[in-house]
Image (tube, rainbow, N blue to C red):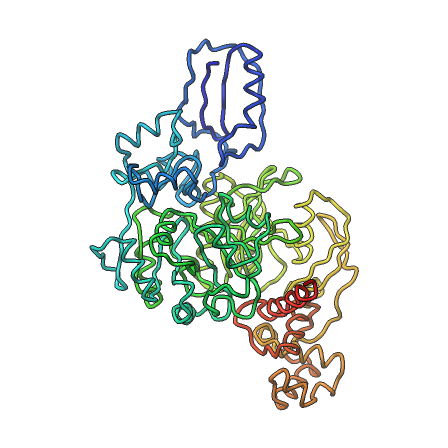
Length: 610
């Protein structure tokens, strides 16, 4: 057959001509034989008069009109590229930026669409003759691979010392020496920097926690292959499929007792967050060092955005990292690692980011252009238009000015690349959320949504339901329509409305937000409501690590309603139980008490099943 193909703002346009049987065969095979990273949302077609062309041409992209096509998501290094990188006879032997149309950076290096090299941070790297020949050859695996490069013409690694001065040493080898010596190395990857230490070095992990101010919260571990994962954790077929997918997410797995990693990686919980290498430099670090595993955590102070630029990393990570393994390919969009888990055989997102963003979520119905700004913690936004919702990468908690700036930076990027100007802004009812404050300052009409109705409506949309449904929303904090703190709700809901049918009994939350950080306060709140004065029993207070003086002070606060808002939160109920059962008086990260309680329950269930 003959014809032509091009990228347009509305998608890929293909014109083919030939005998009818051949055209029909082409249409049958097209959706079945797409490249690994291709995503077909829909196929439409019409019959037109033959053009009389000979051969098949690829035309220049058409950047006119309304955006309808997508930017691909970032993908882990494919098997073909790994074979080439390991082959001493290949011209890309050990090249830390090897990629092809089946793998490599996409979203994180793209300024605008159509997704072509001039719109990426690879524009400054002019391809050498050999790379250009691959790029121009439709039979080559690197045909129109926008980040295509090699040792001759592409990006390079550099090693910087703790002051940011370049080292003349071989970068990967220098980084490995530091890791083996127990040092912390900031490594620039696909969506930003990681802080990296050897996962078997307890002292290094403790030092990393202290510098990063991340106490208690589990750290992710990168290993070289699936067999290495199986030596550390229990791995089901569904979990193995997630680990080896092109998205290469962190997957939460049940750790084996004899794993041999530093105990401080995931203290107090039976799970381990594990992922496989997804950038070529990760493969080089693990394979050359002989290390079993690397702790790789976002390069930032706790709750700040991940660092992406070399100068930014040296400035922001001063005092955190002992050295920096950097490169000169600019990261245009920050993207933390995605985190998933398998529950009852089904994968569930804990954090949707690198590898999945900015692929759209298909909406149930047409919607006008709108922006939903999300919550205050674990923030994301969604920019929607028509039948597509473009969810941002994980933005973190909007506690700092830097996080708020990242929110605006990411939103401007999404509005630019998808050419969506919101006509409405949707926000949470909570007046104290930074996202709500930002939304209320915008000129567009606003739509306020109750927090738990949003949870249930989101679940309905995910499963194609319009309602009414009985929805259970069990979480930590949400602003209720009665002004109290909700979090243990049964709602009769449609997509547009709800009735509060039932909820957990209100109890006082003495100290307000302090009760989130100090679970013993919630324990006193629940016990005060349940048993009154008996809450001051000496043995009970000792179990919760609370003095009688502090307990009686909180009791007076509860009775007088001083700084003790009422809550129906299920999360706060778990906190209370953890304070009584585990003696957990303080938490270092959100939901720590509940996670540790769940961990004990999981261990007991496993013991009973065995």
